[in-house]
Length: 121
Image (cartoon, rainbow, N blue to C red; front, top):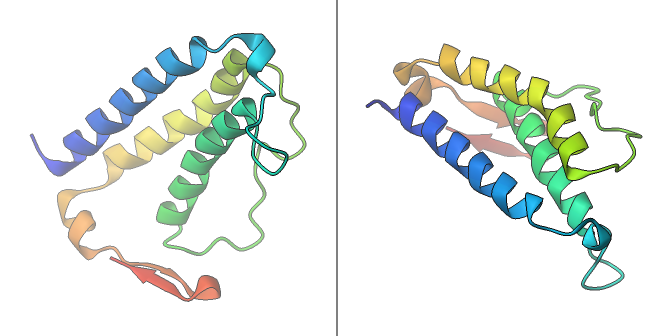
């Protein structure tokens, strides 16, 4: 098994376990927050799903995200299933991208986010 396969298995297992956890949360608790400044449960789920998409775009564009707009912008919170269904096409795109990356890419691609003064290998 190579590094790309390990990455894909990890992403799939994390999502599988997350869905089990998220699906066990009663709907009446979706908007619960531990305090007034925290995200609600459903906002945290969206943050995770949207964050995966942002991460994919950062890697795909090697850190350059000029005028990037989130597909989740102005989307209402409906349910966990709605969030998962909405995110699925973006996740599929991300997984396809991972399949297109080679082992040598993992060693040679540099992500430089100059606007944030970040550079990662």
